[in-house]
Image (cartoon, rainbow, N blue to C red; front, top):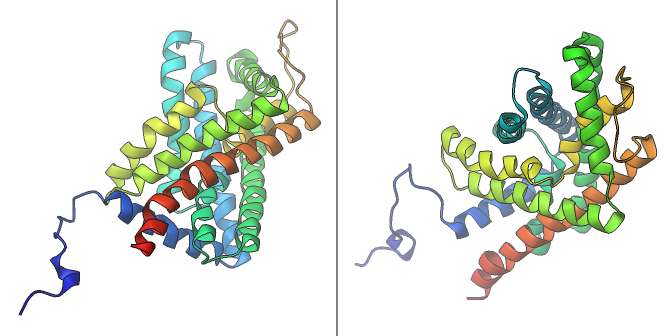
Length: 282
């Protein structure tokens, strides 16, 4: 008798990467799973996600502000340290608003409702915000925020002001680019079977976000908090735009909209039509 159809597929080594269609199925199933978490679990994991991402943003800030690191070196190296926070969050199983936008695939497949994913995204976004605020406050009260003669504060305010210096359309498009890279990095990481695979797959796409001046909402939060709660003694600090609570809120709103489009539409929905919908109609 012939071998059952199911077992005729080529058996791959446990070390081989998942195929693109297998990644799509994994992303779909994880999206369904995440949207069905109870609220307390979503909030706790979102809080942890905001904390981890903030550590990466702080690492980037420290490298950029360090007086013994040349600007040319810090520009190249700091995005890699920024990516470490995101890698920690992903591997540790934390919840991040931007990568959860991939659950749009679960909605497109009909497995969850628009309410399910909207609820999940809102809870995670708020929890990420709380986590980032918590780390920013701890860092502020540690006294380390004023290291290097206020250079850390100056850098946080400069980066924040630069991110504010765009109109609504530009901010949204920058958010689209940011989450296309973040979600592509996650997609590549989902192909891996080991921690090493995931680390390497995430590193460059995530590092490209700050390197190319793109934005994602959770990654913006820590530096925004630092810029808002600190004062600087540098009287000649020239900022391209004002750092205010309203400007920060507006930025986070429109960057989040762009993130949803970039990750939810340009990655999740497109891959749904390529790998999930087509397969089910074959």
